[in-house]
Length: 124
Image (cartoon, rainbow, N blue to C red; front, side, top):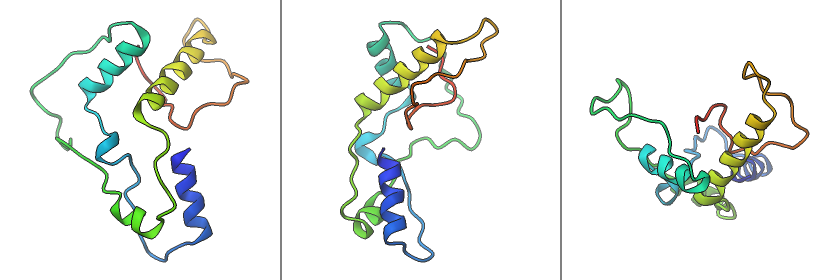
């Protein structure tokens, strides 16, 4: 929803040769461990994960999208979907896909529209 709203604002009043960091900003950022904890809280199920002190080459140790330029150029745009709702939608959509999956794991098409926040793969 928020991504679409920003794109709509940009289309309505485009700015030539501008580049924007479209993301959640610091207030809507979580670590992977925090994300696992949120999913566990929503589903009531423990996540299956392991942790390694060795980071992957090329990984950012910490990253926050800087939204200041977007907000300055498009002050009417704001983030309206918070982390709790985003994670709830991801879990709900994943559960919907699992409930309509064929035995070999290929998901059947659902009549329900999908959230813009849904990942292509999430192991719960």
